[in-house]
Image (tube, rainbow, N blue to C red; front, side):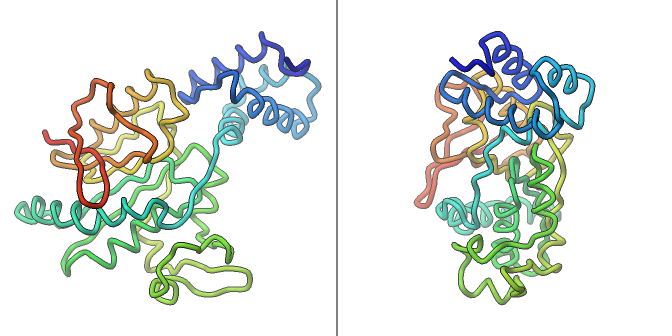
Length: 271
């Protein structure tokens, strides 16, 4: 046991973080919380965890910074290609068939837990490629990390970060700059970044597709179920939910239907 983060402090911080975000810390990832707390104390020039706890209970911005620091932001363009194949081959054709008859030719996507923007921009490039003439779309991209949202809004990615993007997409959607690639404005305009904590209602409604991949693994069962119920409320009838390949709704009492296709598995709101 660490002398820095004693059990009583660990419980105090663990409860606050869970209450504010749904993120769960256990004995196995306690060291992550400890290292992030040490960083914040150094940054704020504070001597004790008691002082820092007092600060975050009265300073909402510093609390956001702490929540930002304890999340893991692993992402890349076209991560888990099978999901994007399923969008192209199954989901988009289904939605075009369903929505086309109503006259509403705009598809609405949400990338929840978007990190630095690779996922929502992947969706935007793909939709730009595959939607028929006369159709439009919007991708709302949200995260609990303000730092990540700033990177996403900037949309400049170092050379090493553009791996996975189809070769034909690079000149079409990016401008080469020293040290990396800048996404062009005519694709950036389809993505709207917004701070959002999945513990709360997003206020979004009528969504056709929700991507929330590799986020729920940080939540316990109660927080997962609450988030899934909020997704249901945000989604349109006949819409689709994608979660991470290591995540599942099995055993969870939800109204979503499991969908297995030749490309990937995901969930459908069939109300």
